[in-house]
Length: 153
Image 1: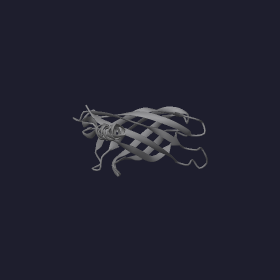
Image 2: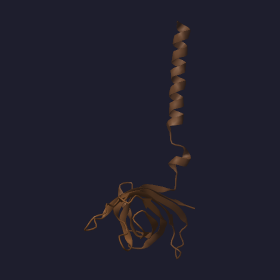
Image 3: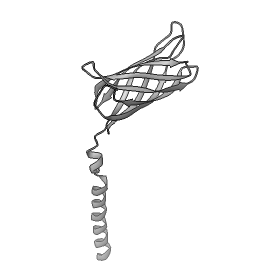
Image 4: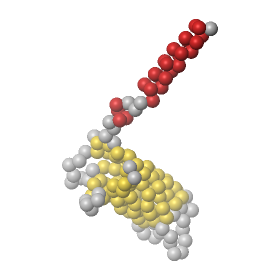
């Protein structure tokens, strides 16, 4: 009986120690230089011309960038080209990608986030999400939601 109690006590201590060791964030996780968050905004698919995207990127509960992009193509597929603008109104990054969806106006998009050609920053990022923009007269503006990440090179 004493051996069983001793084994139980030692096992509990070892198990608790393992939880403490493996439950802590690693140094890599704790010191990650990447910024990531979510994005929301307006999505207006092309209807006889260019479409548009206007939104904001949120990091730790704060809006950090505005997204302005043009959509070229049809309601079911095309390209997204635009920029991220910081709080001072300066272009922080260029955004380029593709969208595809259904004629009903639901779909997904993916894009890369890169420094503008005239900048000295070095980073890479991506944004991906879903949109919904139903057709109708007058043409209603839809919405999007996405996740994004930007990491220094």
